[in-house]
Image 1: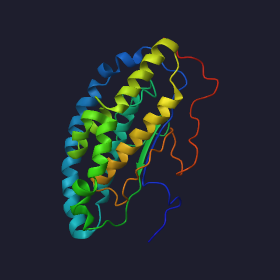
Image 2 (image 1 turned 135 degrees about the vertical axis):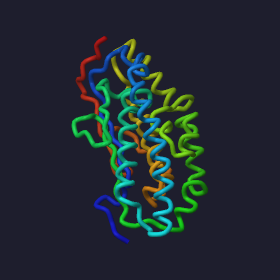
Image 3 (image 1 turned 90 degrees about the vertical axis):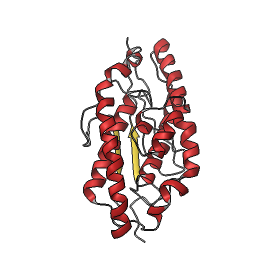
Image 4 (image 1 turned 45 degrees about the horizontal axis):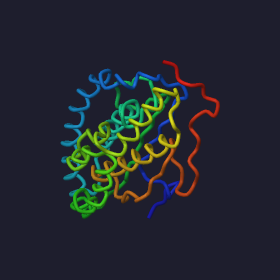
Length: 243
């Protein structure tokens, strides 16, 4: 079996860099500012679902995920993660997300998935519903009402976390930010770990990898090997955010 350069790392990488200067109040209206993104993402995730169905048959008969379909799905997840990080799955930046499926190197979030050269024809029949069942329970706790989106492989799971632990902690961080101008790093690290877990499950059930998502909360803004301390992504002398 081939080995990756960092075999302990999951094929999906999710990163986000918390800005040191965040507006105290902007998070109160981000839902309004993001309406254009939400409209586009609805259609993108509908396409994501049908592309996943098509890739299911491609993997079943050939053992390979068509590269064009794979890259499209990665792009949709990447776009959704930028919106999630800007809004109520993290509130980690005030920089408005770009309208693109492509990687944006200077944006404070990054999402990538290692392309598999081959995938199991047998696993494709069971991993998205049977093998992933324990993870659906965890995702339900983390993302609340968004668990339905994971089950149906649609977009809500990546940019909506109503009723879940992610949404609750982000709300607490928003209130702290409103009154103090600072985002608690401990909350940010924990929220990032939960978002990373949810996205790993999405990649798995969307047939993008055969690597089973680990039951592991890898906290922090940057991906680190298991057991390594998360890097401090907040500048130690960051000035308080301004209103």
